[in-house]
Amino acid sequence: MEASSSLKSAPAAPHPVPVPADFSELYETYFDFVWANARRLGVAPAQVDDAVQDVFLAVYRRLPEFRGEASFKTWLFHFVLRVASTYRRSANAAERRSAPDATAEAADPTTPDAQVATKQAAELMYRLLEELPENRRALFILVELEEVSVAEAAAVLELNLNTAHSRLRDARRDFERAVERERAREDWRAR
Image 1: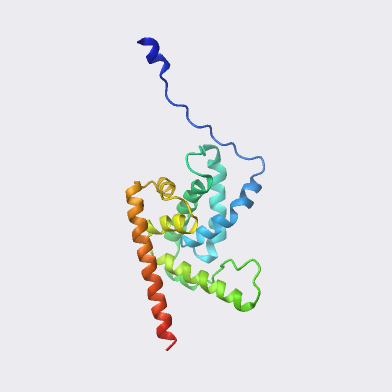
Image 2 (image 1 turned 90 degrees about the vertical axis):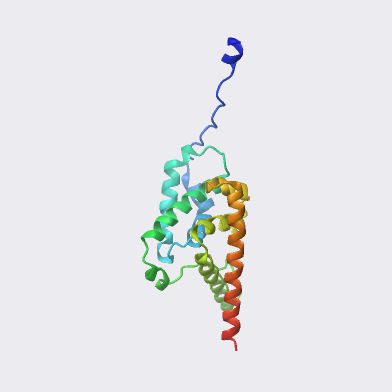
């Protein structure tokens, strides 16, 4: 009996990922992901660049702790979520609404009208996302915009899987209602 109990040992922890020799490659690869999600999570346009830098600074410091239990993108999203929350809390609501939008434009727009339409659509999406309660917004962004599985999003957000499904259902309903309200406003303005 002693022999069998001595053979049992704790499962080995996954090996941490070393910090890459060239962190700039990681930065280049994930910059757009971090920037877009910081903006989607309500960071004021004038502060997005600073928030992105804060995310990458935190990631650089904590990268050796990445264990591969979730995908790197969802692990990274966790940092974006925390930094965005800090920026939102510290930002003045009036300042957020009055700052010019630094929305990313289409990579190769064909006409100025296409640029304007792209910018307006992005502004509308950000506004509608801001209407979602914070505990639903992050989940909605991960699943619907970043196409992460509900299970993986739940793990990143430290939610029970059933809770995540329930919140996602509510977030989809809330977002759809916000879209319907916006369409009704546009229809009324067009009269």
